[in-house]
Length: 448
Image (cartoon, rainbow, N blue to C red; front, side, top):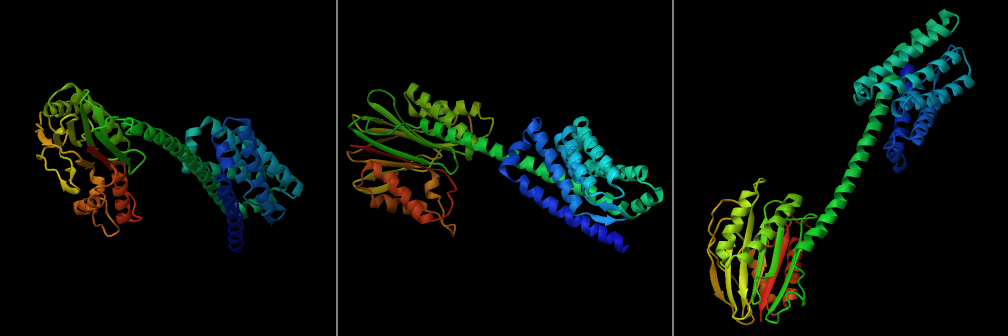
């Protein structure tokens, strides 16, 4: 009993070192690259040599018993065979077996034959029954069977038989148990390495695609500058800062005809890629309808019906849209469940009231009443999404509408280009280091 305990403790100690080395090596970039190249000769050679080295270490740290070396040597050839196939298993078995032969002893020849056979058989199992190796329970059973085979070689080749039987009788339970558990643990580590590599590759692919998607999304926004819209009567600036790589907020500025310009801001429900895709479809639909239909109310009705018909994801859009006559300053606007914009007149900001209406893409044939406003020279409109007013600090207090008015009051005389930037800085100062939860989008329009 005491001797069996010693066998268990020594074998488990050796196995623990091998598992630690396997875990460390498996997490290196070089080995992760090879793991994905199973059918190459470089991988076969690498796994064969790695398994052989594990077998050599098992020999060195084994326990001597009546001319036999009791060790976890077979874990190496089994690993080589399961990972790299028959050739890899045979290489691992040969390396560990030759080293065992050099050490000598009563069971040296039997161990060489057993080790090479185990590496080859595990390689054949890997080639013929690859799906079985996906279950650690099957690997555990295969490992136990290989160790039974090893003990069979000892009984068959070691003379006298009584000496062989005495060795097998004393070591069978710890030998089979530790080696079977060892190969199952080792394969579990290697499966984990493969899974981590697949996850890493998928993350890199998604990151790359999201970066491209972010560039494409920003390219959908109008290039606001002195050249666009390029009219002396109007100054426009805007910004969009998504909470993720891509978002559902958008703004747009485009000419309806030579003297009328439309500007709008919207917020799609949700975040990320689904919201960004629905945002792109909504933006194009709205632009086409507003350009083609003279009445803003009818244009939003048509756009809403179009979005409802294609809204399989059950998303919706809040929107504030307006058309401005650049010659007269007459503004026609409509709202679809969006935050009220701020009218800055004579340096005083105040919310512009609109009839309360349902969001877009929710219910067919929804009517969006149109309101008219006569702008005065110097009037500015500040449009925004709820990411501004609903930004919260560490105590979950919202930035809110009053802080927005106070900020706009302070920068009412500032250049239009500077107003979104000043509001953004005010929001960031309020939330401090808290992570941005929602997309923040702003559009500022000034009729000169």
